[in-house]
Length: 435
Ligand code: NMX
Ligand code: MLT
Image 1 (spheres, rainbow, N blue to C red):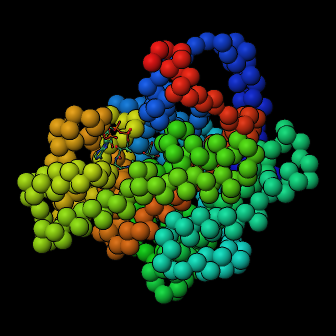
Image 2 (image 1 turned 120 degrees about the vertical axis):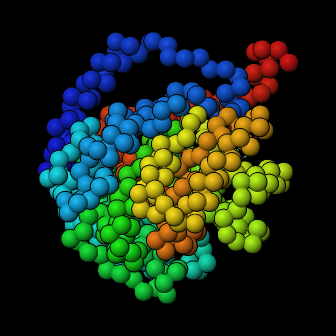
Image 3 (image 1 turned 45 degrees about the vertical axis):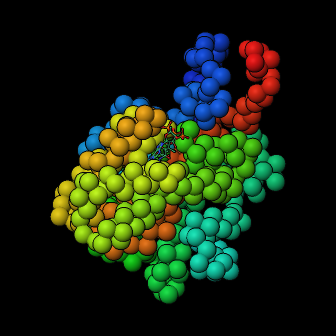
């Protein structure tokens, strides 16, 4: 057993006992009520899942194991040679172990993932069998499904593993998947946008630095951006579409590959992760229509009104839970202010921020008029030359493996059962409450 697995293993028994005792003491307590309207509104506000890795507060934003993003930027290890941004290895360790890691632990994770990162050749063949014009998220999901041949959980289950040991091969699958995703994602990027001129991994680099390298961006500042990007996109409690899909599918004892692919299919929806590409598409088409340059506030306001009148959403704004500017937006804005305060796209994004909330509030129906994570991420990538926006959701997807896989290991360790909520019909509700 490797040291990381051993460390996790030492936590399992106590956590199982703790949860069991808690349920036996408080299992009958009531934590809320369900209104009829919530059944028609995407179950908004219904606490229905356990997700230990992070919690989203509507007014405060995300906390990972209790820590806000600015706190993590201070506490998590960064690159030893003057790096400022947290290493994603650190947030994974925090989510999995519930402990802030030291430099050694983060280095051990980097090395462990580098050792696990070899992608079998048939995965590239599966991706190559798709037309280059297939959306990068389609290619990404196909690649993840092809990786499934390597599932240790599927193999162990077939051989009759005892249920108390499920978490062990799940840990192997989760770690292998995280280690291999950057290579799969970079392969798709170089295949589609750089004539298939692939770049070999550099095992001496950290996980996000190596990902940047394989994408073809060896600039140190871009590597720092990738570290921040991977960290802040890693998790957003359990109910968002991608995390919930992974958890739901995983609850049927589908392995990490099947479950993660399900989550990525959800992330590819335009109201979820695909919004990051939609933001840039929307800004570029606004700029084209206005003849280029920095649009005035009035021009942006008119373009927003037209978007709404056409029955479309303004991408990058609004949220199902948050009721303030997303702290992930703020972290990216700070990165832009530190590194590229005069970038024209940044100035446009900033001006949009000044205009959109009033317009969305004026509709009288949008519950959160403030920007979310996707309103900013594309601008930072564009600045460094990663302009192929159809690829952006793949980056989000690679990051989301960190939270969803840490959760999946815990779900197996705690022996959570298959998810099976009840449903009802409008006719039955009417019978209950009157027509
Ligand atoms: N532009 C226009 N209309 C909006 C927007 C927006 N940005 N946000 C919400 N609305 C509308 C929404 O479509 C709904 O309209 P209707 O009653 O006609 O169906 C109404 O306002 C009430 O919706 P809310 O309760 O405020 O939002 P909800 O929780 O249903 O949806 C989002 C949350 C994030 C799906 C929604 O705000 C949205 O579509 N935003 C734009 C897409 C986006 O940025 N998604 C990325 C979210 C973050 N992520 O990465 O996943
Ligand atoms: C996410 O990061 O998953 C999004 O902000 C969507 C959500 O939390 O519902």
